[in-house]
Image 1 (cartoon, rainbow, N blue to C red):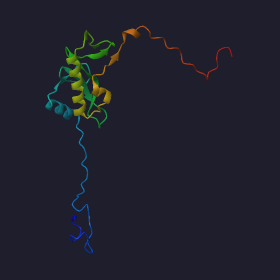
Image 2 (cartoon, one colour):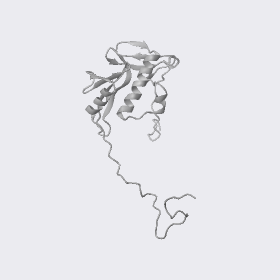
Image 3 (cartoon, rainbow, N blue to C red):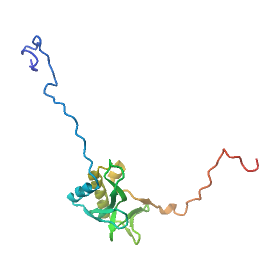
Image 4 (cartoon, rainbow, N blue to C red):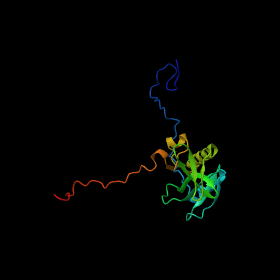
Amino acid sequence: MRDWGCGNGTGHARAGSRFNPLADWKTTMAHKSHTPDFDQMLEILRAHSFDIRPFAGVAGGVLVSKHGAGAVLVAAEDKAVPVALAEGPGVVVEGEVARLLDRGYQKFIKTSKVELPASASQLQGVHLFGEELKQLSGGVSLYNESLGTTSDVYEYDRLKGREAEEAAAARPWEPAAGR
């Protein structure tokens, strides 16, 4: 017979003894989590080999890059989140963060000056950069984004030129002309 430490070894409790399963359990209060501010977050990113430099295109913006990809971060207005994205992750081309354009048959990287076909290594770099940035900054990693790189713009050639002009929405509450 197993002795659970609550009796005299015979399986019967001693008179007046009580079994307390939480005797060794110490209650501790949960510590408050520390949310780093913008400058502390930049130091955390530097410690993880991210390249950080000022970005002239956005007031207070900082270009954070790694793996050939980058994003422009700014201080968030919400104190619960240290950083906000002014420009989301993309390939860095000549100091500018390129947008990812999906044309259905191929992905392209597009800046204000050039548009180039995206290579697999560039897409992997953007994906890896985005995941690392989310993990370190406490961002939410969505399932569809964790499967692979998502595009900023979708332009399918078979649908180009099919955009119909939107007709004015019907307003049944207004009287029709001629009634």
